[in-house]
Every structure is written in structure tokens, then in C-alpha cells.
Length: 222
Length: 222
Image 1 (cartoon, rainbow over the protein chains, first blue to last red):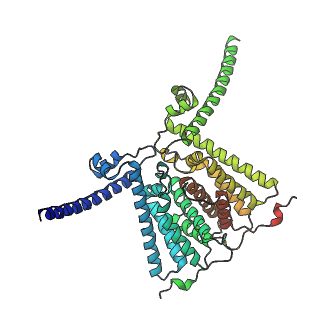
Image 2 (tube, rainbow over the protein chains, first blue to last red):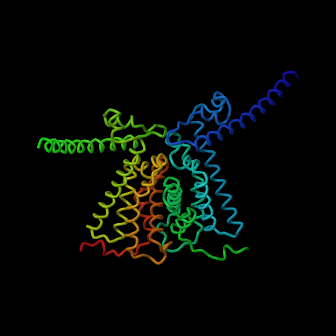
């Protein structure tokens, strides 16, 4: 009975500790995102700077992340999961407004560009070699895959003009990604130029690559 | 007469010195380009590192460039002038092969993407915020302007399909630039993904945005 109690107490303790640990782990990842987003072109990314941002002692970071690269991988995983969620929300809203595959794809495009403009630091971490060149982990490639997969699915559903540049939805989704990335990246990196609204460019790029046959009634309330 | 001789000698000396100075100035800029191209995500860019690369003493750099930013501006000016030359050569080749405005624009597009893939370090300096965020000089915006201006001129000349996403050649040139930049930037920054050939994507992006009415005979020898 004493042993059982100890085991039980131990289990409870361990559960608490794990809960606390998960919480701290999340806080460290959040702090790392903040550090990365604010990084100047020559600032180092160190676990020490993350600990400072999270207001914890440096050794606490090492309990959760063996080294910098393990933490950077967790950061990427989290930011890509957020991208999946942001675009799913945009798509759901478009669907609620009566939008078909085209309107949903467009909503995703605009949401991704808007995110980039509002969070240029995060965007650079995700898509501009702010982090990836520091890592050498094959899992990276899988983090963003759901974004492309959903884009391919929607493109497959969209009734199109006869003159699309390719019949392959996967190719079209890569072209679309390139176009949208170009809009955000140039807007961020060439701030001295006089740009038209990026969301307008994003819609035009999406429209020209996908060439949808838009049925106007699809946006009418059902 | 003695005074005249002195003036003459002085003038000669000064001419020689200027010639040497120009040569050294060019070597320093070349060294700076090399340093920037090879820069890791956390390496600092210092005049000291440039002097080391150029194999000269640090004070010699300061004779020509008051500070880091003056040198960075000269680097950008040189690299953009090179872009103008590279694209002009591509265009001339296309014209020699009998190409009209469309083939010339396409040749420029492909040349710019090929440059980015072959010189990712230079490309990042030019278009990816490797340098520009460090500078605050309005002249930067003018360096790349000839590239856009030529693109607009060619777009204006291209007979097109009725369904271009915009009638404004300036807007089309921004969309084209965004698309091409996206192709190079993603290819550079997402090396773990399995990309189709970037020049193929570049041609598809250019074709879909510009929607040319291609007259096949334009490529036949005249």
C-alpha cells in the first residue's frame, strides 16, 4: 500500500512535471520566435538570447532543447502548423460566404500574403532562409507539405479557362506559391519602392496562374 | 616656366593616382561582393573582412569608402549595373535569333533566373534584403529601375491574348518581377524540396502573366 501510494504520488508528480514542462517548452519556442523575428541581419541566434527573452535561466532551455538546432526545428514546426491553421480559417470563411474551390484558394492566397506583410520577421523564418540554412534535418520538407497538398486539391476542383499554362495541378500549385512568395518577399525586401497593395497583386497572380471560370452565383448566399 | 612644369607634373601625378585609385576602388568593391556572397546567416559584414579579402590594409579601404554603408551602396550600384548588362546581352541574342518583343522579354526572364541560381549569394544581396535593410539611401531605388523600365517597354510591344489580368504594362511588369523573384527565392531558400527546373517555371510564369500571342514565324531566320 505504501509502495502503491508512492507510485501514485510519483505518477501525479510526473504528470504535473510534464504539464509544467510542456508549458515551459511552449514558452521557450514562443521566445525563440520572438528573437528570430526581431533579428537584425547580423545578430546571432543563441539559446542564451532565447532564455533572456523568455526570462528564464539558460540551463532551463537546455533541459528542453539539446541544442540550437533542435529548438529551431521546433520553431519551424510550430510556425508551419500556424500557417496551416490560418489558411484553413480563411478557407472556412470563404466557404461560409458561399465560395467554391476558386474562392477558397483565393482566400488562402490572400491570407498568406497578409500574414507575410503583418509578420515579416516570421515570414523570413518560414520562407526566406532565415532558419533553414542553419538546419540539416529532412523533416523540414514535410512541415510545409500540407499547404501545397491543400492547394493542389483545390486547384484540381476549379473549373478553368482552356489556356492554363500547365494541366498539372502540382505544377500549378508550385507556380502559385512562387508568385505569392515573390509578392511578399519583394514587398518586404524592397520597402523603398512604391508598391501597389500586395493583396491586389496576390489576387492578380492567383487569377492569372489558375485562370478560373468564375461562376458569379457561387458567392451569392445559399 | 618652373611653375608651369610643376603644375603639369602635378596634373600627371594626380592622373596616375586617380587611375590607381579607381583600380583599387574597383578591387575593394569586388572583394566586398565576394564577402557578402559567402556570408553565413550570422557573419558580420565589416570593412576589415573586405580588406582581408582584397589583401590590402584596412586603412586603404577607408581612403575610398568613408564607412560600410558607402561601400554597400557602391556594391549595389555595381551589381545592378551587371544585371542590366546581363539582360541586355540575353535580349540582343534573342533579337539576333529573330525574336520579337516576347522572345526578348522571355530571354531576359530566363537570364535573370539563371543568374540567381548560379549566384545565390549575389542574388540575395540584390533582391533579398541581404544589404538593403542595412542602408537608408534613396538612391537604392533608382539602381534597379532600368530593369523594370525595359520590361515595361517590351510588354507594351507584345501582342497579347485578350485575357491579360491587367492592361497596365507597369503593373504587369511588377507581377512578372514578383513571379520570377519567387521562383529564384524559393529555389534558393527551400533546397530540400524537389523542384522542377527553375528556368521552366520562369518561362511558365512569364507566359501566364504576359499571355503573348506568339507568332511562330518570328523565330524563323529572316
